[in-house]
Image (spheres, rainbow over the protein chains, first blue to last red):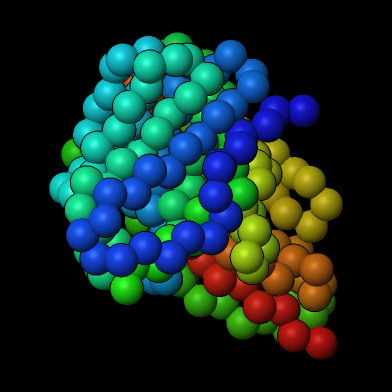
Length: 115
Length: 109
């Protein structure tokens, strides 16, 4: 079974703190994604990575950065957390390649509250 | 720009009824995915549709793809309570996967 593990299920952070959300996958997938899920807005793509050290901006990259130093690990960083970043964050991974038509696999999600 | 529009956003159904969720997308790759999410849980893959006219069925759910119209549908037949969940469609292009806003389905006895 594919396993995508997010390091923290629930976090509470103060405004201005630096926050790290870690994601690890065990299937040697090339692609990894970070989404944010808010009620009524579905999943919005923050960043994705198609290879080590490679990243592409999604729809809402402002206020976030990412790091992919190893293939299995994709980190989401909030440099200075703000209350409007309170949300659920979902990490996903999948195989690469045009025409692959591969589904992506999600982690359990990280619920972040910024106070 | 890659866009995915899903409707309706909320759907309340009686058990035993049929209904359809619609998903319009703007990609040219014509790769379309359906996911299910239960409350407090992550997303689970339901269907992958890769070509025009593709139809996949699993139990009371059937997904289809019309690439000319850039439209996918998720049809629910004779709904049961266990199908209550949020359903997302997603379209993928060049490794970039974008999701619709989701349809929150509630099936009532």
